[in-house]
Amino acid sequence: GYFVAAGAQAAFGNHTPRKHVALKSPEGMLAGLHAKTSAITGNLPLLRTYWHDAMPCQYLSLEQSALARLAGVKLRLGALNSVGEQKGVDSLIVTDLIELAHNRAIADAVLVTGDEDLRIAVQLAQSFGVRVHILAAGDPANNISLALLRDADSVSALDAEWFSGQLAGPSLPKSNAAEAAASPTPQPA
Image 1 (cartoon, rainbow, N blue to C red):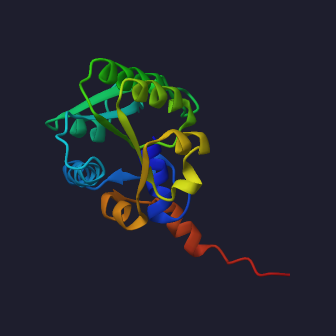
Image 2 (cartoon, rainbow, N blue to C red):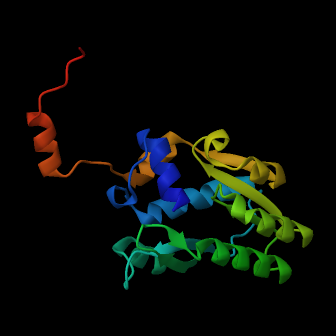
């Protein structure tokens, strides 16, 4: 959710509902992320990419299906409640990060997040000797908790240009665009 929401904010300059944003190419996006994370970690080998998300309904979205089929990607899904909030996703991230650190499966972890709820996982992973890097979607000062910024071993960012190349959207549905064009523009009084 953070990747798409904050990425759309960076790319398009405003809050855009997720249903109006799509990955142009899951493969291309992953290759771009891998290049960025490789630079952050000093070219350490990649274990795998964990993609944490919420299921929008009983079935995977087309985007989630495409990501799940990619080599080296582990799709981990929480739930989406009736008001569109993700549930259980943070717990999955926390569990994965702590297990990987505890099992010494990783030396570095790169999290694309801004959520302070993940701070305890960052601290625990670091207690096992893992360096935890935050990769912000857009400006870190605007969308990463200050506590998470302080605890991270490093903070980098994916900028608006990067996200513009990865995300498609937003666009008004044709009926709304036609209505907007036909409506008179309000004049100041």
